[in-house]
Length: 226
Image (cartoon, rainbow, N blue to C red; front, top):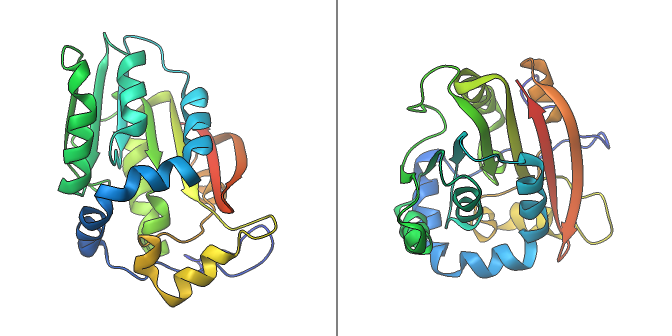
């Protein structure tokens, strides 16, 4: 199964069980409570991703899967003179992101409906692409299409910063895999993935892959370069 590689501990990961055309609706339904989940389980990994992004004012920054704008707010604050673009599949999540960004209305940013499979950015135009908790929703067979699209829009030497739900490595983390097997929707469609090897096969240089576990929820934070 070439498109479904084994993980670092040689376990076969689960594939996505919610189709992509339903994901937007799933996140519309959980948007009102997402920030609570994010604070409890994702905040450490997301904060580390922003550190690794090392955004400098004046850059062209793209966040794919902007969600409720938790990371995007910080991106815009750090890049007030640059170009900040955020896209997401879910109108419900974007509504919350729009509200969150209102205090920064004088800054240069846009947030809109969009898909990782077909980005509007031109070739070699993005300094840094940030992507939080999206690949864990995508079937293995479709991941390459997204990575190719990410590589297309990044400048040579541009940064790719990814955060994903990953395979658990510490005590208690496998509870989320069990929940996913029973009810993928309860997990918002997320299951554990590992992206470093796949990025490498597409020519990215992997600078770091860090593991974080918060409320037993396992995340990987990857810094790669085109």
